[in-house]
Amino acid sequence: MKQRLNRSSRLPAHVAVPDYNPADYGVGIVHLGIGAFHRAHQAVYTDEAISRFGGDWRIAAVSLQNSTVAQALNNQQGLYSVLIRDDPDTRCRIVACIDQVIALRTTATEPVRVQQFNRMMQQLTAASTKIVSLTVTEKAYGIDRRSLQVDTTHSAISEDLAHAGQACGVIGILVHALKLRRKEGIEPFTVLCCDNLPENGKFVRSGVIDFARRIDEPLAAYIEMQVSFPGTMVDRITPASTDELITEVETVLGARDEGTVETEPFSQWVIEDRFPGGRPRWEAGGAQFVDNVAPYEMMKLRMLNGAHSLIAYAGYVAGFATVRDVMQSAEFVVLVRAHMMAAARTLPRLDAVNFDDYAASLVQRFSNRAIAHRTYQIAMDGTEKLPQRIFEPALHAIQHNQSIEAFAFAVAAWMAYCRGVNDNGEPHNLRDPREKEIVSALRAHENTACGVYQALSALTDFMPEQLVADTVWRTAVIRHLEVMLQQGMLAAITQQCDS
Ligand code: CS2
Image (tube, rainbow, N blue to C red):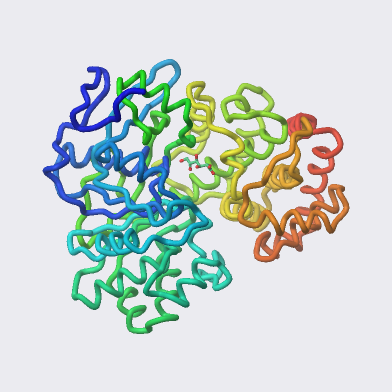
């Protein structure tokens, strides 16, 4: 095994290295949730910004669930590589803007480590911290997407409301840190949500204010007045890192990098420019600053992520392991393109973007032969993803007399996936926060298209009532599901493409 990547590693000339000395710059950002996506996206933009313009904008990152990334990066002085894969070329660059990673827990089931918690709080309350950014996935927030209030049945929310001083959930941590800053007379930080949620800035703002109101009314009023929550749209396809990737990168770098990530060449970050405490000049990495990010976000959620979920469920059930494999099937491509165009019809006009071109570029990105993005990875957390990706455009379609077929097909594919077995007879876990509920609902109903629909459409706070009550919708989902269950996913796709 080679030596670990570090600041004195002698790297091959084709590996791009940042042209700044990390030790010259301080920390200005705390990032919660340092998964592969953050390392391939926001950290790269920050690295470009520091390279070009300098500034104390390095990142102190926090892992909320386990210590794997902390162990990897802290043993490498925060350095890691990004493998940018295109077909047939691969480029490699080093990112140097991570200062340290604080792991709150060793594994998800362990309690929060007090020392690590204190280190995180120290960073969050430092006057030099101007931004707290987040990529924690949809399920971590515990905010009800309809009322935009905190969901008191969510375990992190209920625990943190009971012990706000030792908060270990995202919202509780933000509120606690803002409370301490206010008490000490330190300006608040800007909260930058980078998760795939509609109007993500507004979403987190509402949850934070609601949580604060439940423990400290004046704090809630202060947050409402003083704290900025810009919205963002983030985009870069980034598969989960694997051991094979680490082995491959070892030969590329001549050093071992356990924090490496692989990603595609495309990257997009659209941000509302509201940073009272300042921000890195992310323009250096190509970030776009706009007044209102919502239409971009809606486009990306409905066209890219919606099509991704369709590919994940239909593809996985049909026996395809990766998105690129799915995109080798001409019929699948027709289905995916039709889904994107149905989603495009539900969007408000966006002068800067032509939706046909956007769909064409997505088809090309999904077809990248150099990226093995697993359908099973994207299929995860369906109950958290479907509402904004599929149900919202479906509701729009109903309200505007547009066809609902594409959305009904995607939901039927999700339902087929929820049965826990694919068309090859291979069983799988759903990896959904509501997995237990789904399994017991399915057990209580007949294993027919009607029974499965009945069970899953009745999950509480999931499918919007307007959809549940719509007989055209119900009939369409059941019709597709019937074909999927009786003749298999590929037959259902053929019929959908022919119709
Ligand atoms: C994917 C996204 O896993 C998923 O649900 O749809 O992670 C997708 O790859 C990114 O949003 C692309 O920017």
